[in-house]
Amino acid sequence: MAAGKGTRMATEGQTPKPKVIYEVAGEPMVRWVVRACRSAGVQRCVVVVGYQGEKVIAALEGMEGVEFVEQKEQLGTGHAARMAEPVLKDEPNRDVFVLAGDGPLIRPTTLNKLLEAHRDARAAASLATAILDNPSGYGRIVRDENGHFLGIVEQKDATPQQAAIREVNPSYYCFKVGELFSTLAGLTNHNKQGEYYITDAPGMLKKTGKRVVVVDAVPQEDVLSINTPKELAVVDSILKQRLARQTAKAGN
Image (cartoon, rainbow, N blue to C red; front, side, top):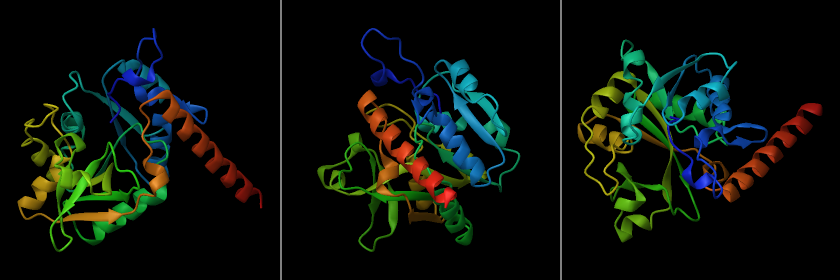
């Protein structure tokens, strides 16, 4: 999903541009996400574009297996994911990742671990979570008294007790295509943002008796948000260090 506007990324007087085209380690962040998907064996990358979508399309020029759909109105992540239905609905039993385009620290190994757990369990939906020292800003993973997944609560909608949860949702999902789109069709926007959240989908599937798998698979470092130039610089430094280590290891 790459339809959002990077409002807080722009310096004073600048016109905001799509967040996903800001560069880290020399490339637009969305290219790192697509590259991780391709390295994990993904054959088709359907990129949802919206605000200044032509710039996102240009940023992905030359990458294989990429196609685009448009979200004309930004009505939330659940609405954005629905935009891919026309190009995916004919394969209801296929597995599909749903990922944010602004997470350049994503690793193919994490995607492989998520997909393996999803298929082993024959799940309708699976998500990879992370445990954070400071979970502020992220959706929280809500479990019952036995530790079983119940749903995801966005921070703005969380009670004080839920806000204290340290297990968060970094937006790494895997769904059966048919289950995904039938559930998205039933989303409501009865929340403080007035948006259609994809985060509601796993909990909705769970309530209908479908199998939902939760995998604690995302390293804390990989969950860093990019919403400001300062945060962009932090992620840029981490990714450059990671690439340097990979280069050094390959040299040995």
